[in-house]
Image (cartoon, rainbow, N blue to C red; front, top):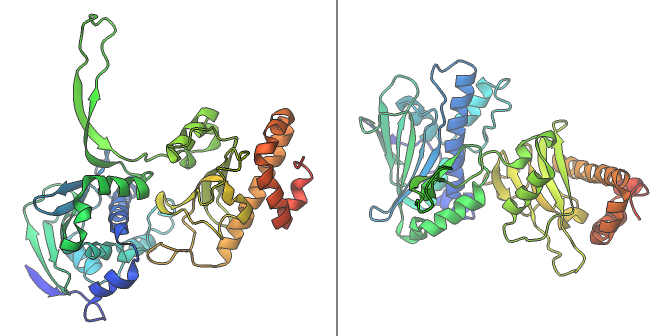
Length: 404
């Protein structure tokens, strides 16, 4: 068993984390699930290039609440860690395992979706927990280890026989001032907000499903029901697919998945997909705007590798398009360490002007493909188009091809 001090330059980093790093305590769950996703995607990547001789299978992430024990546990079936790796990545705050991984595999890992620059994410756990345990077993043939820390710089690390399967369990002993995070409704709300489209299935409890009856079943036959994992996310949302894989119905279905309370159908959608000079994917929708009552801003959601970041997209999305709805996902968007706000830089301006151009091109093609349909919808969209013509020169330059 090892005891030691976490290598931090400040006497105690945890109060600082609690106070300054993250303004919003609830995002600890987003960070821990992002780490679990990273660990799973690393496993996928290393099995795909033959570095790990194991079957990737169908790993999932599980979130469990135990009210009596006052614990919240996040379990993954990813790559796991050895004692040495825990020592290095967890105890030396300055190191980020993801960063080193990306460096080592940088050419082949580009598309593996690893979040990389959030090495501090794990420590957000101490915003809500008085004690944190990590029980982890690496894919390498080494014993499992348990790391325990109570939010002081002291930790213990020892081998354990409690865990025999590969992966990591993070057990948060929730602090007295954070017991809301032991409520099922609160955790479900957070998982739906931040992790709804994460690329690895996330299990939160179970649900009852009714099995279909056989075609030749008797009239009075009663359908059987079964308990199945309650998977709360959709790991392959529409924007991760190519336009050729999606029908009109798929786009509409995704719109209602994003906005369950929205009963009107969107008028048009624009599928964004660019890989140079930056990576960006997404789908924007024109909602119906005629009655003037439902003009709402901040309905576009920003994601980074399928992790929800914010719905304040000012700066990335030009002003006139703030009335649209939809999703933008880009690994290249510069965020501060807690991902809570954008850091102004040139890339953001480029993204904004790309989106303007893309919308203008789409308008031209909609106008040319079916002018009659376009004219029918004109009153519903003209407020956006005319605002764009006044505010964006590049949009104005193309507008003679689609403004009525």
